Image 1 (spheres, rainbow, N blue to C red):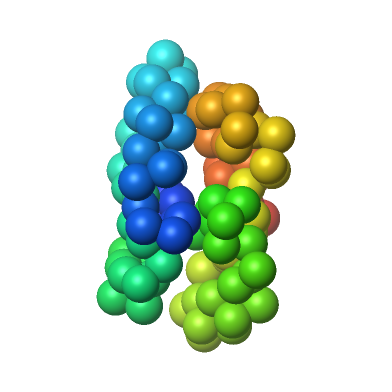
Image 2 (image 1 turned 90 degrees about the horizontal axis):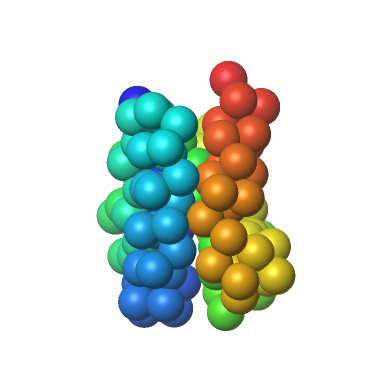
Length: 104
């Protein structure tokens, strides 16, 4: 199972993207767990996941969040703003999966 966390300012704006990613994974027959959280929940939630993707509104926190997650070898990367804005679930899923593969 692939475990992917999306992180934005409040966890709300990524909800639709999560649905699109889950749909894309379902079409491929991939077993995934994809959840969205607000940045305030980052510290308690990130250890459960293999990768964390940041929404554009919290991209400025990349360095801080990456450093926290690095201790557990969990990659943290920003979502491409165009893919985020266009809600391209399949592209964001591919990006997350590539980060998981590179980490293993």
